[in-house]
Image 1: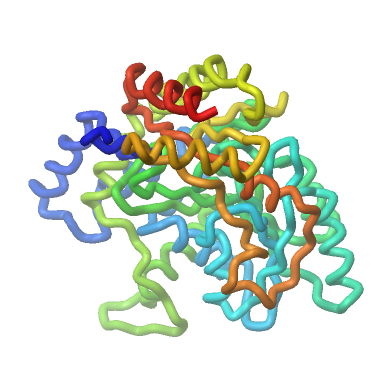
Image 2 (image 1 turned 60 degrees about the horizontal axis):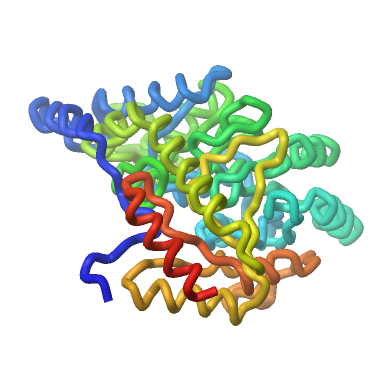
Length: 373
């Protein structure tokens, strides 16, 4: 076994971060306020364009939670959730005392199926439980069918939360993901395309919503010199130090995207001719940041053979997300399924995809897979 572990997606510092972090220490603003936060929010807003209003937070999960709060989701409500995702996309629904209703994927993007989404909405309306919101996910950086999902949301007057936690730097119809639906969400966890160690962001359409989000994220402290609270709030603001890391990372975002897209291209050129291995191609409307390069094998047995062969060489790979409707914690939740996400889970594998991988690293992964196959 190789002594050096090769990870799926490790942090990749640029060198620019230190200047902003030093500034936070020099000015003694290491709390959840300061000009690094304002600068990071501005950097993200400028990248997204379209008059985006950004709130830097301590996690993507916090951002989804605040999005549901802004949309008025409360106890007894139902929220339509993409089943094929990480659990953080769904947990905030439970925080609000609401119930997730799971919607399966379509094969073109592996994301929420518009057809099943509409079926789910009609079913819930027929049962006098019109959903309060939709949470759609750009899985592994591949944009969901934005036009179709948004059109369904408008048709039934249901707001769409755009979970772009994995999709910073991805585009749909030449527009950056994160500001394509009603409210957007990002994650800057250590494994994301850029990182602040821990962190996230909420993207809203107007200044009033931004002020409401900041109020909630800052313990809902009312105006005044003393501590007055008229509603329950949260400690969700990002540290000024970590925002400095984010500012340095934003300077190299485009390079990080291109590096990961190059990883995908290399893997595809080397492995696509192997029998039983396929890749997810880009929809003609989309440009993926290729946060993770994923392969779909012909069987669970083949997937495991490859995974175990990589692990034997100290190379990390992981099965796809296990669909939420198959998770024990959600066993009693309603779901609208077609078998797509379960098939993907059984046969799919995420390969090392970090922007700091060398060509030698990629060749090693490819060699191990070829021998295993």
